Structures are given as C-alpha cells and as structure tokens.
Length: 273
Image (cartoon, rainbow, N blue to C red):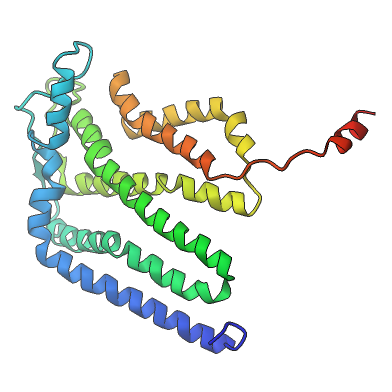
C-alpha cells in the first residue's frame, strides 16, 4: 500500500506494530543475555580488571622500551569489586542484560525504523538512507569496541591506581564500575556517529565543508579537552590514544559533507563596486 493510500489510523497501526516487534526483539535478547550474563560478566565485563587484558599486554610491549611512558607491565595490579548494597547484584544482572540486548538488537531496531519511514521516501532517497543506516550501525559498533577495548581500560587503570595518599586504599564498588563501563562505551559509540550527523546536517543545508577548515584549530583544542576528560591521565601518550581517533573522526566527517556552493563571479564584482 502506498503512502497516499494509507490513512492516519493505518500509519498509527503500522507504528504500533513496529514498536511491538522492537520490544519483542529486546525482550528476547534480554532473556538470552540474562541467561548467559554470569559468563559474560566474568569473561567480558570484568576482563579489564585482570592484568592479562589484551590492551595491557600490548601497552606493556610498547612502554617497556620508552622511559617516559606509564608502566603497564605491573602484574601486581588487581582490581576487585565490592558490593555495598543488598540488591545491587540482582539489579546489575537485570540492567546489564537490557544494555546487552540493546547493543545486539541495534541493527534490527534501525531496520524497523527504516521499514517504517521508507514508504514515504523517493527511490533515490531510499538508496541514500539505506546506506546511512548501515554506516551508522557499523560506526556505532566500532565506537563501542573502541570504548571497551581502549578508553574504559585506560581510564580504569589510571583512576584505580591513582593515590592521593598512601594511607588511602582504593575499593571500587560494583555500581561505580558499571556506571563508568556503560557510560564510556555508549559515549564512544555516539561519538563515532559524528560523520553520520555531519552528513545529515549537510543534507539539510546547515553544515558546509568550509566549516571544518575554518574551525579546525578550535576543534583541536576542544577535542584535546574532551580526550583529557575521557581519559584523565597526566601523560601525553595516554591522552593522544584518545585524541587521535576523535580527530580522525573530525576529518572523516568533513569527507561526508558537501562542498560549498560556488560563488557567482558577477555577483562578487557587483558587490565590490
């Protein structure tokens, strides 16, 4: 049925079934995640707490030959979590299952959005939007992987080993660990959507390619500040690990933005008279 033939109530009914299918997918994956969550928690979520985490091993090989880099070869650093609330472990089990389901069903949820809006688009628009959804999904997952494999472990290692005084022992609560774990991973997933957002803003005429050239210096400063906030380490090497992916995203965003409209020379000449 074409868009013109569908009434308001038929559109509403289609939206209702879109939401129903999306909720069913979330519930099914949440149940699966709940069933396997103890294994996922031990082998995936808690992996950055172990000294043999792949990032620490990789950084150890790099930092061992360079004196001014932080030491990642200390196998004595062990991060243990404590639970200070009676129901925290149960609610963490529930909430983590939901976030796990949300990540895994993200492509399907985007497909449902696409299926709902596609009848209202022209054929050439469908081709563009189809690739946009695919590209957005891929970039989101890449961002989540960068957050899990690099940003969160670096932040965790620095903040947990930081000491204001030798008389203070660090004890990390389960709630604090999970809040930072989920926040940093999803923040990086959203940050990696920067090229997609730039493309969309370019399509509606808000963003031009000259913007990236004009404000590149300011963007570098802002991205440095953002990298310092995400990974509050004092050494430049750790800071650069977060900064360079953000800067590459900035430059990649400019590729997806259309060039400025050409200036009419006759109008320029008249303006100068």
